[in-house]
Every structure is written in C-alpha cells, then in structure tokens.
Length: 247
Image (cartoon, rainbow, N blue to C red; front, side):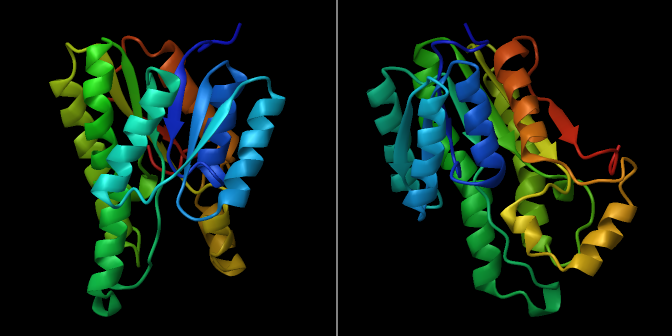
C-alpha cells in the first residue's frame, strides 16, 4: 500500500520536467494520475506508460490551461473519469524572458495567462468538487524567482509571486472545507527549461547556491508528496526547495 493509495490526482504540465517527476512520485505511492499536456502528446504518453509500469493508472488530458473553458472542462473530465478528485498540482508554467525595456505586451500577457490565470482556472474548478467530498489537496508550484529579483523575468516573477499570495488566501478561505492549499517553490532545477540557460550563466548561478548544485525534479516531487500524503495539518504554507539559495 502506498501513502496515497486510492487517491486521484491531476498534475498540469505533466509531460516533462518537474511535472513529470511529480506525476511519477504520486503514482509510485498509489495514486491514479491524470496527466495534463498542452501540445506534446507523445511525451505525455511516455509518462503514462511509466506510470502503468509502476502498477498504477494514468489518464491523458490535453488542455491549454490559459483558456478558462479548456482548463475547467479538463478538471470536470478528470473528476468524472476518476469519480472523485483528491489532489490538484498546478505545475504548468512558461517563460518568455526579456528585460523590461524590451518586454512586449504579448510576452507579459502570455506568461501571466498561463502561470497565474491557469492556476486560478484549475483551482476554481476543483474546489467545488473537493468541497463536496470534504477533502482536497491543492499544491501550487511557485518559484524562488517569485521571492527574489530575477533579471529579465518580470513577467515570470510577477506570476510566481502572485501564486504565493493566491495560495495563502485560498488556504484561509478553504480552511473549514477539508481542503489544504500549499505551495512548493523550487530554486534552480535541472529541467528542459533551465537547460536553455547558457553554460557560463549556469556556472555563475551555481556558485551562489550554498549546496553547490542545482536541484533535481525528483526533489521537488518529494516535497509535493509530503504535502498531499502527510500534510493534514499544513495549509497556507510554502516549502522552499532551493539548496539554500534563498532562506
């Protein structure tokens, strides 16, 4: 028996990186997992195959979470398929980096719509379902860059800082509903997104991390698992997983 045996989970942005690691960790502990993806069905299907090899079951759900109707229809579909929805991990996120003097309206809006609005759309659809069953675990993936300055990422930092504030307010409002709402804030983590950072800049960043290395997606996943499996008395909180880069 896993720690969340019989629970059902929806992970957004689950086809790669941190989302993939979270989906696999939840499945490893017994959950049935719905894998949201926006474009790359092949990668999502590969994660589903890994989950099935672990002895659990997976459901592929394509949706652009920045579109309210798509995000909410996805949540409803997962709840209908699984008969209940216990865990929502709002992980999907994008970057469109540029220094403020050169950042376009499109770069700003696209990041806010996906990272922040998508978190709201999915959560607002899941909350009535979880309230009706008097149980729910919502974990929002924010970022260290929502806490500290990140040059060239005003849009990303704003979205992730807002997710931290959203998490606290949602937790306070839902405290009597059986739903906990928390956030995990990764530092610099080895993902496809971070691989795009030039090697010299990666070396400079690493030199400022007290633990002397970047995080692994599996380490973020373990923090999420802790909150959904053992965090019954934890809500409105933020777990920083950043190697001591921000304390």
